[in-house]
Image (cartoon, rainbow, N blue to C red; front, side):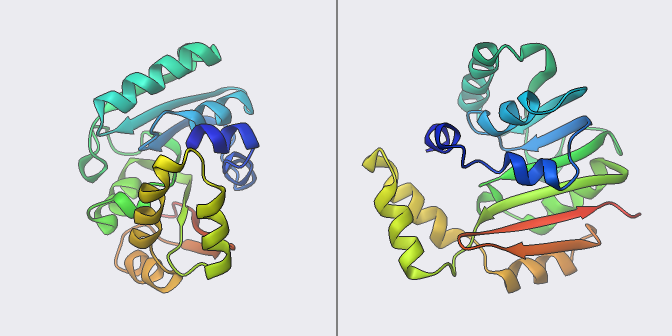
Length: 196
């Protein structure tokens, strides 16, 4: 599905860049096959990326894709869990993630970890689907998904995703403040700058 989003130009790369994440060292949480981070690297200069994922298979695939993109020198892939990131405090200028928030076992703890690894003034962008999207849009999203074999996974992702209120409640209990939560027709974006 990520490859199809990439090919259609539907990834959140432009939203990430518009949020100010366009320079320095960034962390991508759960990159899957790596297309979003690689697209971000292609569209920015003087940037480097470290991507963290729990799946060795996904990291291997992402590494292969980085070679195909010719970006292996600007990205590294690290095996690890976002609940306890293997990075020192205040390492990154930015953190971003797309499509994985609903998979985080304890999102409040991951938000706290994002706060810990971000430099003061560092930016973050977390995008995902939202469970309360319009039913017609949900139907269209499912209907247009190819290959059809991944539809059950998409439905599961939609059902596991959060509503605007749920994300605001989780953020209020986290150290990641201040945050802005924006809603679009099918998703949510958590955007902000580390203030303390």
